[in-house]
Amino acid sequence: MSCKEWTILEKLLLSQAVYKYGEQSWLQVSSVLRQNALIQHRQSDFFDDKNCSLQYYGLIEKLEAEKDNPLPVVVQLARHLYIQRIQEIKNALVDGEQELGQLVSEIDLIRKGELDSQLLQMNAKEIEVCSTSIADKPKETIPLDSKLDNQRQKSWQKSVQILWQEIANHKSGPLFLNPIKKAKAPFYNKIVKKPLDLKIIKNRVREGVIKSTVEFERDIVLMLTNALMYNKEGTETYLLALEMLEDVKDQIELFKFANSFLKRKMV
Image (cartoon, rainbow, N blue to C red; front, top):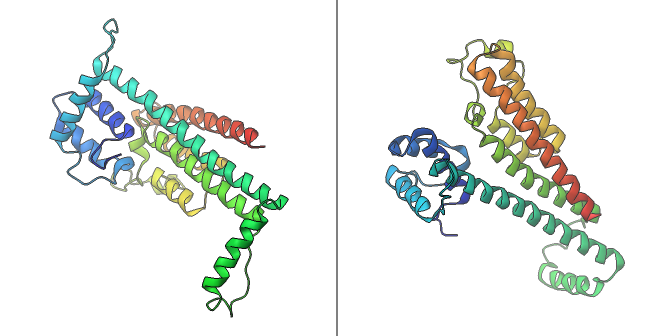
């Protein structure tokens, strides 16, 4: 994919922004996309108002809108892109599991001794190149089970980062993306003992502090529960946090089911 080509996620976020702000508010649409944490890798001028407008109307032109569908074209476009995004996520999960499956098969062949000749050839080449540099170093071996565990952990991290993106992409996600500022909530740290936000959780996954779906779910739920605890019942923020909590629980349950299904296929 060209660096100038929009990804499915970027197109989806564009359609959602247009639906929210309208087809005449391109400066607002541009500002929203530039501030979205999921697409920060782009240069600042990529999401300028002109580019956003051209991309949107190009998508509308290619969209095969349903004539009998009473929904606005922008909603039909968003639904179409949402389906594409879900399929993209499924494919990414499958690719991750295929990589893990290849490693499992390779380790099984090594244990059976079916790759002994290849391993000996590889070792001979490594010894020829590195014999002088490793002469004084102690030998260090990594157990096969440890290598497999590391690969599984990497596969899980890759999958849960996709789940994190979907949670951050929730309509209330921007509320929880960054730490709460004292100016907006002066007594927040006195009421909430363990503040959390989506960026902190993402960093914990990347750094290996969060190592399982259970730990990931715990932090996500705590983050949203903090909002319920601080905000008065019935307020807009309270209701948004409650709605997001219910949606996120469903997303995580689907993630758990998908992972358990893939694990059973691996056995």
